[in-house]
Length: 164
Image (cartoon, rainbow, N blue to C red; front, side):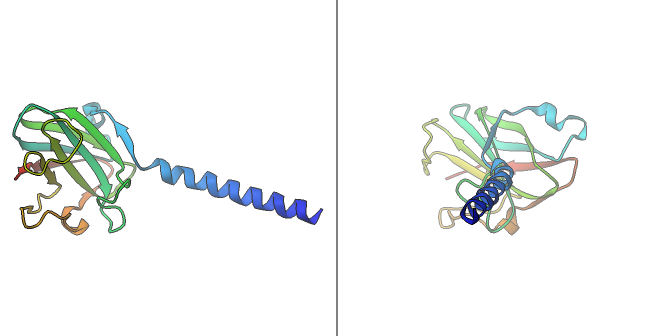
């Protein structure tokens, strides 16, 4: 009887851990469409991202949101929402809904030939707050440099695409 109770308690504990872990895991890696209606009427929390300087109308532009924390910013698999759209030369606007108010970073990538790989000599990239990126500094900037404070409304930002 004691083994049965111990096994039952263990099963309940593991079940509750799985149940509580599911919502946390569900907050990451959401591939969504660019639905601008989600930024209409100050429905938030969200970031309305306008990207300027897109060189070509070919390939794909990807926008990803991250929590602006040391653990999450540009960490593999730690993006919250990802929007991919066919590139349009010059400027594009995206609505990035967020789970709650807080500080977030946005990363943008223009995959010029749409091959799904980073071609450093061709593809473009940029981040919220437009930190400097150059050939000598290809690493990710600190989450402190890209963090954007977001309240329960829609926070507009402008990002300038950069190419090598």
